Length: 348
Length: 261
Image 1 (cartoon, rainbow over the protein chains, first blue to last red):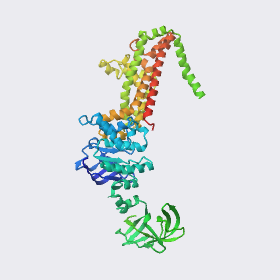
Image 2: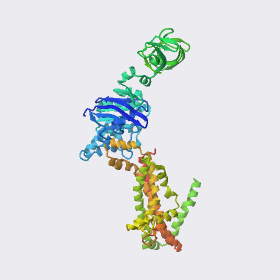
Image 3: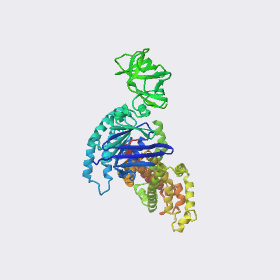
Image 4: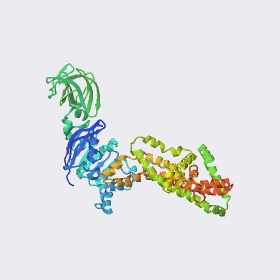
């Protein structure tokens, strides 16, 4: 398979006055499995559809291997696209659905019937559904339909594979299975792939790299570890993983919660109202008087390996923390809390 | 259950049975003689032949109209959507009078056509026009919901798999619509076969040329030749049954393959 890199430069797309994409730059390396992650309305699907040639930008460039892709329509781009709701041809059998891309090729390059049949069999084997060849899409489960849709997209030997919320319409258990399966499939076929999701767990588990988007802009690009451990912006910190968010006041490098000074560094945040982000499990529990925060335990629930405690901090605000089960917390205790890791972002 | 059956019997089955019984008063030879008379055969040929041709035209034009109504947003779309129902709602005699005056030699459309040497009113062509008029809503209203349900994503999918626009239409869209199109065709055909009111005004009603079967039944009735009338009616009834049966089979076939969403 020929290596393909995708480059997107300063892409802008407006629907009326709403900017779905507001200046997006992105480079996707050959063989990558990239996730576009963001809440709905963040522009991730629009970006994917523009790369596929199903939508056209108002400004900007898209190139495959340095070649202008916007000069070509969806048909010429040779991109495999998998839709959230499968978009299978319901009047065709599974076999014919997968064969479609091979049968509509121009006569000059079209394979003979035996080659097409062999290729379809091979693809149905790849998605492990060869026994469903003669069924109609309406007779399949959601997970099976999506695997057929993927086989159909792969039939044309696409240069790039694009998946729009591929597991969005499936139930939780099937989703989990298909995630693992997609990753091993990608490992096997190694086509440059981009998938869109609003599910952070899905993005972190499946992708090599994650692109976090919000309001038509890219907030951060990085490895799954990177976006989780080192969120670049307040949005990323809040969107990925569960975070405690505290409104704090920064004044000349000193940090205060309400009227209570905190023994924390401002990390270069400008003076004024700011937000402090801490992961729930990064709040370490100590005896009263230790740590940056102090508070009274209100309420404790046990969740498997952790206990989740509601703590009313001195200085205002009530937070939820996850603590290991070894140190038992009781309602009414006064405890000290020290954030093992935290980020302060300027702005309320 | 009991109510349904009694009601159905009173309204539908008993009259139909009466019709068949009446035609059994004839011996098979007489029955055959009536049906194979030149005038009857011509009337049936005019009714069924023109109805089928009109249904085919409606299939093509109806599909185009549906496509425009469902896929495009244009000013007056809702008005056009409502106008499609006019042939449903208009008393057929009114439609017949309107079409006749429109296509008569001095009518708005008749005059320019006459200049071209085409005569519509009082010819079989007039019957054809009336049948198209009354049949069009059947195709539109049958296909419309199916097309509305058809996800535009399947067209995008076909395109990204390398299909041309033409291949997308012939291999994906039309086959998906096929059951609805065939149902619409059958309904438009059935309606055109049985149409009386709008046709007799424009037809001219020349025996053997532009006389439709329902009119011939009325003529026989007015001549008190009831057995003749019922014999023709029985034939039309059987054909109608066959059409309805075919429509039912088509719908069942379609439902087996395509989930109801």
